[in-house]
View: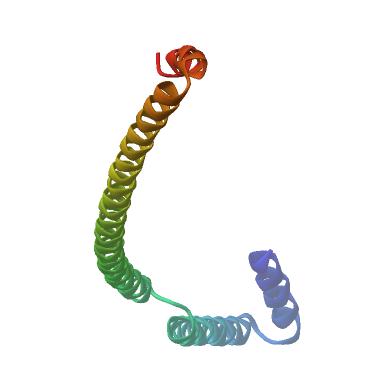
Length: 161
């Protein structure tokens, strides 16, 4: 299309001017066209460079993303370390509390077993005293009354079997 325009322009100029002048004007127009193309290319390159620089300054680069990832990984490692430290401290406190409670339970158990054994011995002593008193009572009743002795021996015989 540009060549068609150039040919049409050359023909119009040749009609008005001589062919040599028309050729010079066409050459001048071609040089201006080439100069404008070069200027457009240069301006395009400048604009591209400016845009690239602006984008680089505004957008995160791969290096920026890499640095952020490293910071995240470092923070993650620190947090995991702190969590593990807290976990160990809590496990230690739990174990200490468990041992203290087990010790208190064992102490209470021993105290209660001691008290139960003391009560058991006391009750056994009381039962022995009661038996002796019953035997004395039976003996007295038996000595004093022959029929009551027989009745009491039958009753106590069933009870103490």
